[in-house]
Image 1: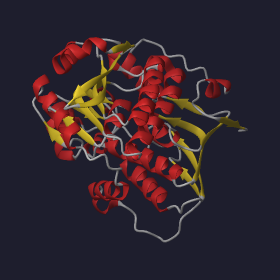
Image 2: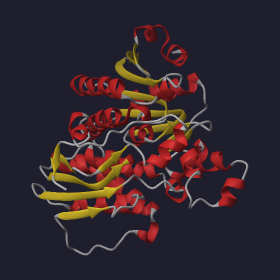
Image 3: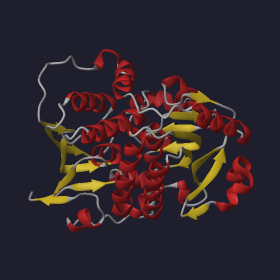
Image 4: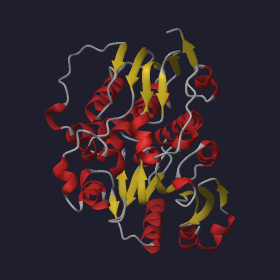
Length: 371
């Protein structure tokens, strides 16, 4: 709350506290804006069930009243300890994030200190992103990457490897932030004011964004074949990286209006390697979500069927805005793979009861199909 007072003065006293979120309206450069500030001292600033419900209603109100949104994020994303309960509501909330962005509402994100997982996807979905040299940003945090068996031991031996790969300066060079500023309330306030004054409230240019992300992959993008399939299999049991995400986004953008697209998802999570993080994987995950949401606006029926595995950023990206999400009864759906959750939480257990009814009651899926 101290940060809110420094930024918004007496108006901060009117902020509502919901779990780890401070949410309030402020006058910014003569315009009423909506501020969402995560509190790192409460559940690490993560988004649980109640936070996602509150943010969902806030996003809808902002669209009705055409208020600019300012996110100040110090968060690890969705709350692992709440299991399906957090995952299902985060899915629905992120769908509102995507719709808000596509409709052209001004959205800004400031990565305060740590911005990882789902929080980085929220930031990546905003039209204007700011970090500082003290920011740390990524789809997967250093702790997760360090436990990845593919990580180069020479990198881990470098004394400043976290800063050099996840720090604000490195992230800005990689394309995660539009600007860097000093890690002070006055500097953030200046950037917020500039954003509210100068934002032209235009809709996202998905084709331009797609070209930018494709350029990050250099010559790795497959050449167009001229054939568009109406049925896709994504993952094949393995994590999804930037190339697969960008290829899927390309397919979505080229799918004709009013058609049907069936996607079978079989992936335990987004890829958690350092190589993927160097390309800012959060941007690619968010981009897939925006392309699914755009397809829905173009009257394309996007049906996602979870076929055995689903989790992490790729689950959120595909399922938040899909027309319908189906799940096989024997599917394994999680926020992150079990070994990753254990690495983060240590001895703390997360009970993800796997019987199918939980998929529906938690809103992780909309319909069950026989295995």
